[in-house]
Length: 218
Image (cartoon, rainbow, N blue to C red; front, side):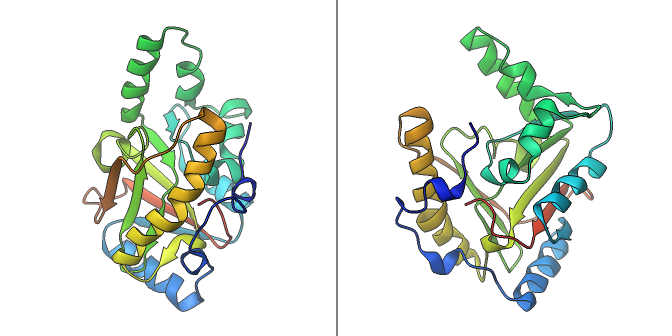
């Protein structure tokens, strides 16, 4: 079942000042600094355009894996990867068809090295850094090195002025909402157990940030 931010926002105590649409100048600053730090950036106006960007970016025959991301659900990518008319190798379908827990966990680890790994992010500093965290590390494990290529999709609401603000956003916006989702989906609390500050991409063309001019994810 797809979960949306609206399912949890009324129950979570979040800092709304770190979850608002920035002005165009701030968006432009973030794009320029991300690009200066080695990230490719594509700015689109809508969720539909974000999905179209992914479709055109990922080549036929590529192995594709995604970490859990409300943003990817909101733009329709998760459904498209599972049911869509594409020519990719869908690793999530392969993984979740495995009945044996140990073998499925091993396949999840192997999927970190997918040709293309897609996911969301918890915060983007306008100074050019990406911040994310997981309970298990199954998403951010791929971002720094393991995956051949990384595509991060984010709404502009995740842009904040500084790296300190990005870390605050992780704690005061993303975590409370993810905790509500985890309690409902899995019956357990979430945790900021494994945290990533992605400051630079040194491999040209490896990591692309698709920035959507909408309020998406958390």
